[in-house]
Image (cartoon, rainbow, N blue to C red; front, side, top):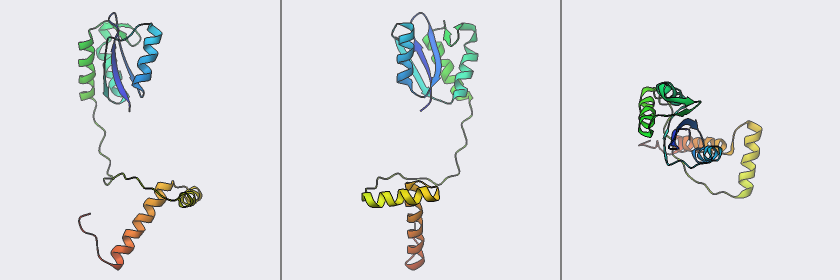
Length: 146
């Protein structure tokens, strides 16, 4: 998941964007040869990072490092996150995840069919399930509540 983060190194604040927060923190701590005393992050798109950098411009030390307080940087992240419009909800039906155990031979056969038809195994299973439901409703009764 992508995040906008604030790392406090006492003498400077680092604000950035990453998809791997733990690894990014380790990288920066190694580069600076010091540990962060506080960290803050929120799940957010990259546009939030750009707004935070703009808001913190008066405090810029160099690059993505700032001289402001940790609280000011965190407040800037929260404000920027609220300012970025949320992406519209996809017009997709709700999905439910489930785990399915199957025989190895069947799994390999579905993989083969999927590769030849350009679909993944899960798409093959989903298509077979849809066809099964259609046959059931056509031959038996319509399933209510779905």
